[in-house]
Structures are given as C-alpha cells and as structure tokens.
Image (cartoon, rainbow, N blue to C red; front, side, top):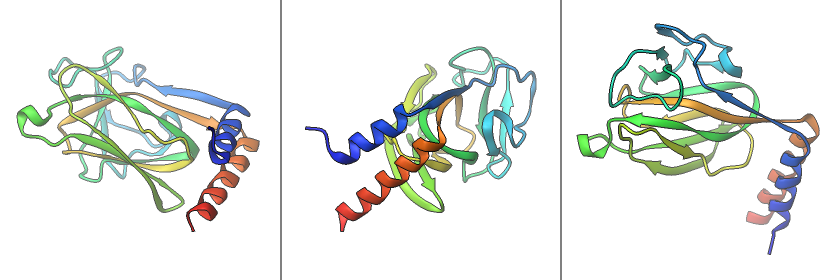
Length: 177
C-alpha cells in the first residue's frame, strides 16, 4: 500500500526533475574545487580538491578525475535545493583501519537524513543516500583524505515539484506528531 506522503513525493519528482551528474572529468591535473562547479555553491568550506593521477586504492568510477576532502567536515552545499541521489566512492576502508563512510543530509539548517554506511575499497562502489527529499548541504562522514568521490548524482526539481515536496514535508511533520 502506498502512503500519501510517498505518493506526493513521487508526484513531485515526476513533475519535472532534471538529473545532473558531476563526473569531474573536465578537470585536468590537480587543485582546489571552485565554488559553483557542477551546481555546488560551496566546495571550499570542506576544502575539496580534485586530481587525475593514478593512485590506488583511490580509483575513479569513470574517467580519471575524482575529488577528495582536506577538511574534517567533508561538507559541500548546493546552489539550489536538490534531491541528492548518491555518488561513487573508493579508498581505504575497514580492512586498513578506517571507518566506513555515510551521508548526513541537511535542509535549511536541519539534519533530515543519515544514510547507511559503505566500506570503501579500491573498487569504486555506488553509495545511494536513501533519501528522496530536498537537501541543500551535504556531509560525507568518513576519515578525511582516505576516500575519493566520483560521479555525484542529483536531481533539481522543477519549481512546482519543490512546492509539492514542501507539502510532503509538512504532511510528514503532521503525521509524526
């Protein structure tokens, strides 16, 4: 049985979302990520960097270029409200003494979702967020500089869909009370 909240959310997303994938493959060499790249308003708070050289276990999912973070916050913020689908990760994981990674998603200053975890290996693995609501700030929980991210996928809902997602959030809030 489909809940009203699930139906409203599905309708909102179907009302015109455009999927974007940030694959970083147009970046050559190495250096800091620039704010605004790929629709992400703020890469610099997290000190995200890119590089395109061979360096196992930090293997890209596609192309050569991937990103990593130098700041323990491991965060970035979008220019617009989005629905974050997920990304591909590789790097050092539990076999090398590092904890698994996970997503913490925020909307308008509030934590809205914590994802399941992923143990990084040298083989890139897709980690979905497991959340279909709007987000504007993202934290990748994990040991800084011991994982890389590639092919970040998100949807930008059409303006009418944003309003429907807002209604879905209100309905969920009322149901929880």
